[in-house]
Length: 261
Ligand SMILES: Nc1ncnc2c1ncn2[C@@H]1O[C@H](COP(=O)(O)OP(=O)(O)OP(=O)(O)O)[C@@H](O)[C@H]1O
Ligand SMILES: [Mg+2]
Image 1 (cartoon, rainbow, N blue to C red):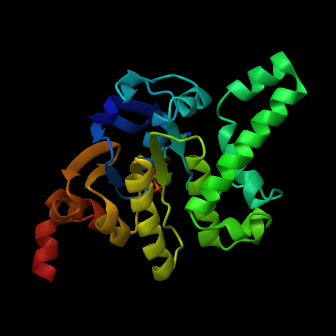
Image 2 (image 1 turned 135 degrees about the vertical axis):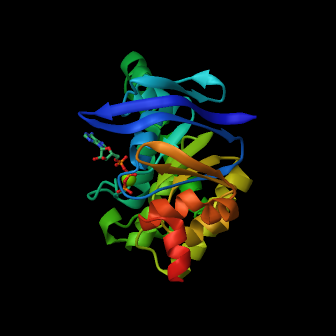
């Protein structure tokens, strides 16, 4: 079954066509990599999928349902989680509190609180706390629950951000460069964590990543963007050998590279 689909997505910023007729389909339980040089449109693609940017062409379907143009919190409520290229943790909050904010995409809490007052809000908070705790256990970071977020290492903060997406039990999670700045050991841990999220929680993952080692290790398929256009798609092995992909990364013709080596 196709879990996430983009059909002919397009968006322009001024003169720049950041995405142009971008289509792809991710099946349920897949780990999809999105790669491409800087400025290729990768983050813009995630922004369009999660509702932060409205496309001027095309549509997005989540589990077969159109979600194009819906508000980010509504799309989150439909089962889409997201992490960002830079840390989005609240610095003044503890790890557990940060995880609890992962439920705020759902508007139900607000509605209940408005209708029934404080008691419903407390029950909702208790539910969020329980889910946050379970997500912390899942990623093996329970012992850090009461630390301020900024006291964690960079790698740990990334894991907390991933855990935060899990507490609303998403169908799909989009990750924007989860491995940036991680050491090799941490990279291996992230590799294992992403697989467990897929295998044990049934989450479909779409991951922008420059760290080719991680892409090769965990992705079932890879979509390559350049200049807002999909230039290749396939298994990591096939894509890495693709002449257009090599050219996109090296910024010169492949035959020139062959002669040089
Ligand atoms: N809000 C915006 N306003 C104007 N231009 C934008 C906006 N967002 C993105 N762009 C432009 O769209 C293009 C794609 O940017 P995007 O951030 O999606 O690239 P990327 O593939 O994520 O790059 P990187 O690997 O550096 O993160 C760039 O030319 C960028 O300058
Ligand atoms: Mg980006």
